[in-house]
Length: 462
Image (cartoon, rainbow, N blue to C red; front, side):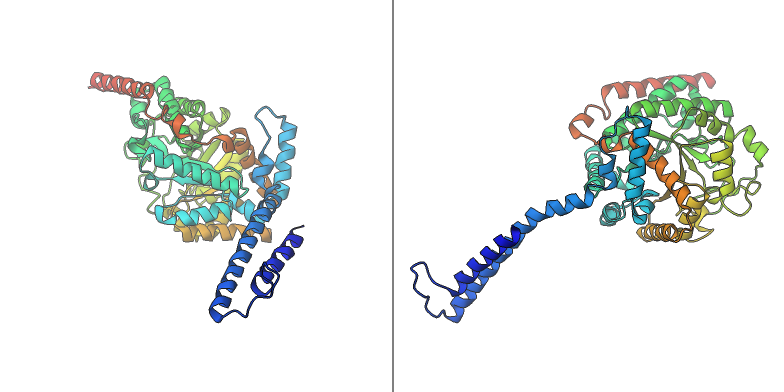
């Protein structure tokens, strides 16, 4: 039908240029100037026709390409759908995914303002599984909402699974959003107060505001047991395992109730570290028995409570694996965390651009090693060049079979399951609703009450 219309319109254009006028008499020989004018008119009409045809055909092409895309295949599954129905749908999604799409889902990227075009391309063409937001991406609440909306919308329009949109909002000193949201005391101050209730309140209110901004993952709480010399002293709830277990559990419950996915870190514990893993290699000189007595206890406690995500550090634990940092070590990730501790949630590998990681290998090799060791998601937080290197290396490893297909599908099953369970595609930030949540009166009162109790505690201690 379209070809017939095209032929008729082309004939009309031809007649306009060379044939009879409306009176039925042959047109006079046109001057060069007239011929040029008629040619321009004819070309314009032809271009208009081609645009109209493209508008008619375009949606059909897009529809046929995306009807069996991961995003479309995920639609229609509700939280109360049967487990059989969910697994059947996940199997269908896995069968429809290309090696490139599978590689993309294993990655979480950060970006700067200068790299926004690159991250957009990685979402639309490479279907990366998540993004992580830093201070550099934040100006005000409205801008953050628009940014997160655009990121999630782009994933959907190009047929990708919904994005994990993550942030490190631990509380001071790791406070990516600053004054954009309600300010609560950081983990160390909450540890001084030692109140599971107030820790839960702070986490719940924070999560509500994160969700209103369009985030669905908070890379918190920190479960490291840290003394005064530790590099994570202010980020930790305390130096006693029982206290970190108690307050870590309260924080996880609060984040969940507020509507974001919690991620416990930094397995198997970096509280003993005095050097910064962002700068270079960090070694934790503890054997397994020592780790079991302290550092691993909060993780075992939260695993029993079903924590959805655990981030593995890139510190080196020579007594467990003398060669590979934790997140690249099958001994630590597969044998200890996945099998010995029976963890069935998502395992994240800490940023590959940290000095503790890059001192061991190239970004591409590290990404492959992390997945082979058992990581489900790999963070590459800054450089587009290193992000592209990680993506390309994973695609090649999947195609060559270096990454085991069964292990890969188990990883993707876990990723899709949690995205399905939390209905990430439906969690769009709405500015009108967000205004009633972000820094609202109730949250401000909660923050003041916690600060009042904290100051009272400090005064009594002095």
